[in-house]
Amino acid sequence: MTTEQAMKAALQHYIDGFNAGDAEAILSLFAEHATLEDPVGGPVREGRQAISEFCQRATASGAKLTLVAPITGSQSNAAAMAFIADTVRNGKRVNIQAIDVMTFDDSGKIASMRAYWGPEDLKIL
Image 1 (cartoon, rainbow, N blue to C red):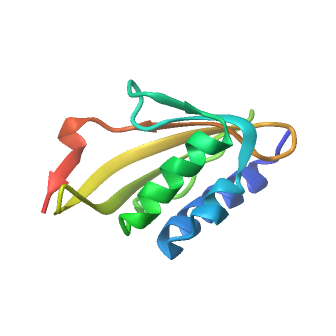
Image 2 (spheres, rainbow, N blue to C red):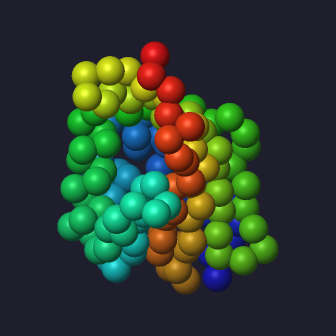
């Protein structure tokens, strides 16, 4: 099982990758057959190719993530982070308040990512 410290470090690397615009750094955190659901209730992207496309689009938008609380671990294989994503959609700057919950496999890679945010959490600036 992945340690709480390792899970928190992976989530920090996820944030750092976004803020550096480094899609490959983000992708390297995911397991081969991982899933990504952003937002929850939307399409589930499965596998490295689909997740790579998500990472490329997100970093190309110039998205920046700012934590609003410390990254939180668990006594199991999951960790969560609350943040604001500052990005551009349809030519307009927006902030999205989100909570991402990630589960990890035994090798310390992200097995699943679920992003919790809804229409009321998206603010046009």
